[in-house]
Length: 338
Ligand SMILES: [Ca+2]
Image (cartoon, rainbow, N blue to C red; front, top):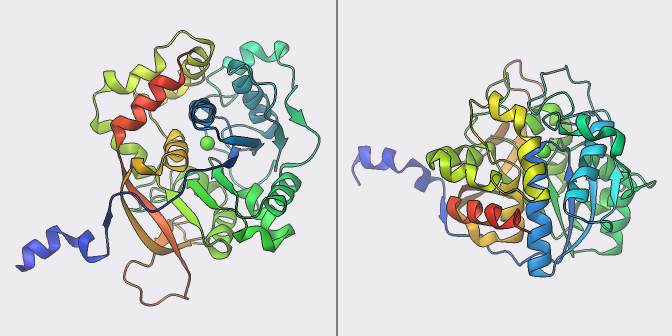
């Protein structure tokens, strides 16, 4: 092969794998979330797929992120209300990260939900919210159903890290941990540039997961960005339904739509699609992952040992680098129908 050709195919040299990783369909699911408009869209999709595929959603664990713990708890209840679901329990998690995080302008607005929650606040009854903490629920569930639960993480990873600190044995009791977060090409979405929002908010927590859990699938922010290759009209279609679910998703995105330059970004649903339908993955890598916790410009950055030299040894995680984007949009359109 000519030298130039080799450079054009650099990613082939680091073991790019085409097609989907081998993964069974989920049976039981826990979603860790910080709603967030994109979390709303993701949870609506998860409930739709769960019903269609006979998957049990054991609970939602919430964590401060797109809003305060109080806001995200209210937002999670609003999502289940729009889905007419009185059964899935919501467990409150951590309100602070492992290390303090400086305030940043909330992308989805002051309530994390495009202002929709503030307009509904007096009417929200927290009927799905349970007394048990998110951390206790995660520890108990992993021990009760070892090897059976797919954990989907859509928020900063503090809840999971605190649960791992409480009971280190649960790290490998989840069947799979699918994380929306990180940036595999260092094209982040925060002021640190190379870091993604969920990982920058709590890099120490993220590093604990990659250190202790051997069955992680990371869906990085660059995958979400690739939806911008599709036509804007097509990506907007899942936001046009007038059902309760459709209105909730649309309203929760109202401020983010303007913050994103009049564009509907599809972020958290990517992890739901990968967890429920692994066949939507079209390209991935299996490499050891470390999270930078100190750098002046790189805090929260994903450091991948692409070539297997240097660093300390660590097991591989799966890094999803491309999805069947049309399949995900079609799922989203279907999920907001009655
Ligand atoms: Ca989220």
